[in-house]
Image (cartoon, rainbow, N blue to C red; front, side, top):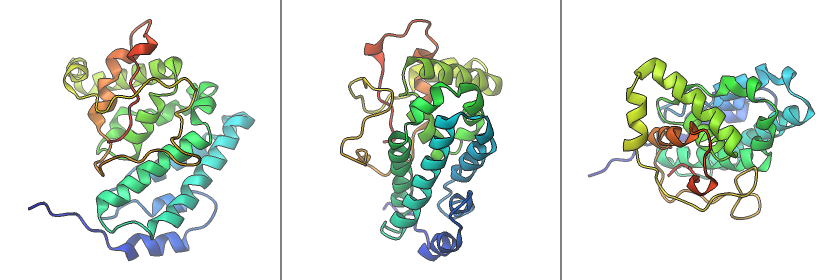
Length: 230
């Protein structure tokens, strides 16, 4: 019999209520809890740390996207099931919604060097918000996809060597969708993206399996796969 992992609502809810409107306090509420949702706080700190190096568009993304995430977490947390899988699904869905709504893909195109600190292979374990972020970035067009793929593959090879080349051929690509024709993944309805059909964690293998295609010198658009969390 499958046993669901349950999180005490008060553990995170009390933290969300007391967290401030500015900074990364809201995201810190998801650290060191029984659901093991790691990464939101570090993503926030990394974006804020580099905010001074962004142009007006980049600064606008950082401010608006973090606000979108913080407000969304506060508003939605009390409405989700106490199962960890449901909480994680809510977090990952909110990531996709806020990144798309505030045009992360466009902001990234002019700030690849600055935002490179977000693309870190070792932070993808255990699977969580970082894997969701990487899967989103892999949909941001060929230039960004190549850049992300090269960084991840290079870092992967530093840790695992030639094994990284084999992962691309053995990991499942998951659900396939038609190629996107915009610079940012398109929502299925105004203000929201289609939610995953299961509450599984984002698959590290899905991101890794894109690395082979991402390092090709002339990728074909028809081969692109919409990689989202399942």
